[in-house]
Image (cartoon, rainbow, N blue to C red; front, side, top):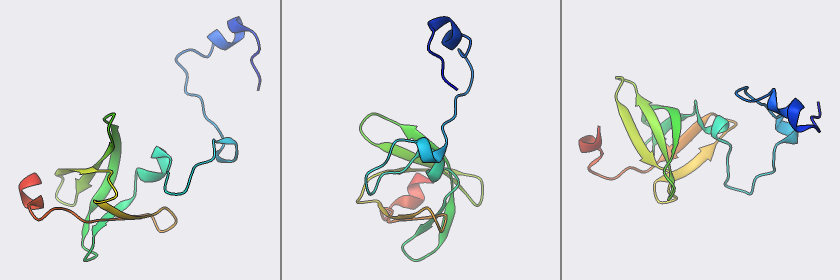
Length: 106
């Protein structure tokens, strides 16, 4: 539906607007929509399940993935190429390489 008058568009204030995936802006390779990232299973490079992405935090410099671990703790993973090794939306999975001191982060 099209709203060409300001008064008509004003009635939408505070409402959630949605866009069909087919109409969404195209992404470059290696870019993802937030709604594709939330819900991904997160594994380390040894295929050990770390948890599930619950939120994507926008920090300005790089995004941070908020992952809920199996035991309910939150793990914050920076969205950096040095940390996030693979994202497979089709498989619903993200592979990360965490620093050796990750236990101190939990």
